[in-house]
Image (cartoon, rainbow, N blue to C red; front, top):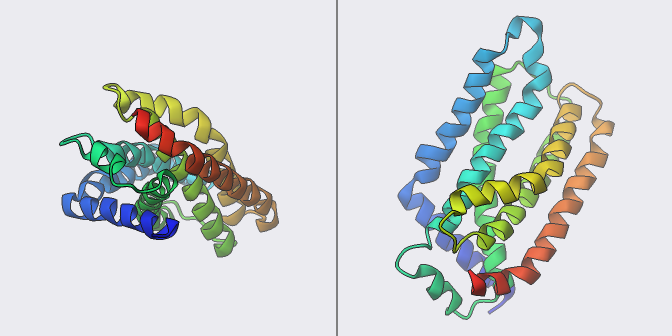
Length: 224
């Protein structure tokens, strides 16, 4: 069985579990929307502040939702020795990593589509470059998902994983949040050419952590 076929098996498993439990739909998605609404009401729109801070607020909402999604991705295997079954399945560790990262990426993309619509409706932003917004969002999402999957397995076997995952993840993804915010600032009413270097940084980060995760996930899963 090929690496990608194994990865899609793992991704399909996680996505089917989430589709049946509807945790992402009923908890993570409303959480992100509430964050945007709170900021929209807290800031004074008459000063023109909302359009300027919209990129940062969008990615803060995505980051907070990512923490919930990553914790959920490994919590579903904490009961009934499901993680042991994953170890004994014979699947390649790199494929398991890719599968979980793909599932988290798909969940975050759905979340970002809804949150992006909320930003356009609530924050009165102007779109300068759709391509820059979409590509930078995909690169940032892939990087965050890969990083979250890698650090999620580090904390998977610990009782304090709910608090340890944010402590491990937040410092590492800070450059991603910065790059994504700058790219979106350039794509929303700014100069699009200023955002493409940030997109390059996001893509490099995604490739780097995906490569590290494929190499390290298998041994880490065995120790979890």
